[in-house]
Image (cartoon, rainbow, N blue to C red; front, side, top):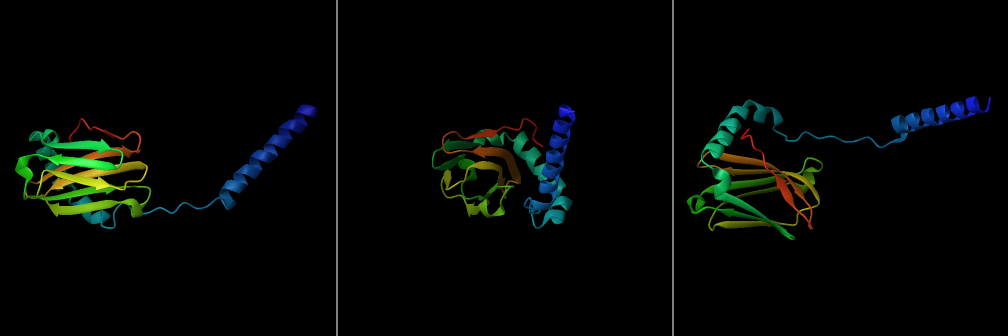
Length: 153
């Protein structure tokens, strides 16, 4: 009889927990990754071609990424001087933390600082050469690293 009371007690606690989650827990607000999501999906073949161009031209050896405590340093090869470059650090969890920089490269290096702890999707696009690099980065001030995609797509 005592075991039955314990089982019933835990059953009621379980049901209360489920009801709490369903009715009282905060709702998660989700956003589209991009406001132009459907337009970008239509042009995805161009992005695939740009990634293949970057992979076939060994672009990953021509653009080096260095991590420091206060930010990320991008070092570009001489051939990219006076080219239009776009660097996007997209934070999927919070659109307010996205960093988008578009500029004409005047010197070989570019530094981005004031990153918040978490995962970012790094997109480096060189417009005149039709190249794009896409990497996933985990940023932490003490230890930063990025995941290398072996597949160009």
